[in-house]
Image (cartoon, rainbow, N blue to C red; front, side):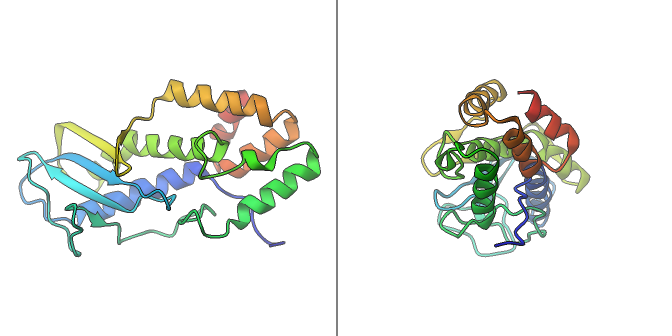
Length: 211
C-alpha cells in the first residue's frame, strides 16, 4: 500500500483504449469492406470495456480471430499494458483509491471519501471515466486509419451497456464535473492532487484545474 502510485491517469487510459481497440479491430476479417460502425460493450462489474463488434458497410458483422460471443461480439483479447492504476473490475481492491482518499484526508480532514468512486455515476472518477470513453468515440477513427483500416464516410463508435446506447455530451459531463468539484474539492491542494492523480499530461491537468 505504501508504494502505491496515485495514478488513475484517465487520459492515458483513453489512449490505451484507442490503441488496444484498433489493434483488435485490425485483426478482424474485413475483406474489401469499409468499417461502418464499432460497437463497444460495457459490463456493470467492469471499468474497462469487455467486448466489441465491427459492423461493415454492407451491414454484416466482421469475423474476429477468437470465439464469438452470443451477441456476435468478440472479447477484447490483444491488450497493451495500461499505463495507469485504473482497476479492470469494480469489485477488485482499488489500492489507488484508498491511497488517494487517505492523502486527500491528510490535506483536508473534511474531504468526503465516499464521493470518490469509479462505480457511482455522480462521482468524479466515474465522470472522468466517461470522458475517457468520449475520447475513444472521438479518436478511435484516427487510430484505425493509422492501422490501415478503411472507414465508411458515416463511421461511428457506439458504447452499449447491455440496456442502452450511451451518449457522452461534453457540455453535460463538464457541468457534472464542475458540480462535484464545487462540492468536494473545496481545498485547492486536494484539487491539485486530483489533477495530478487523474491526468498524465500537463495540459489536461491545467484544464481540470481551470474548472
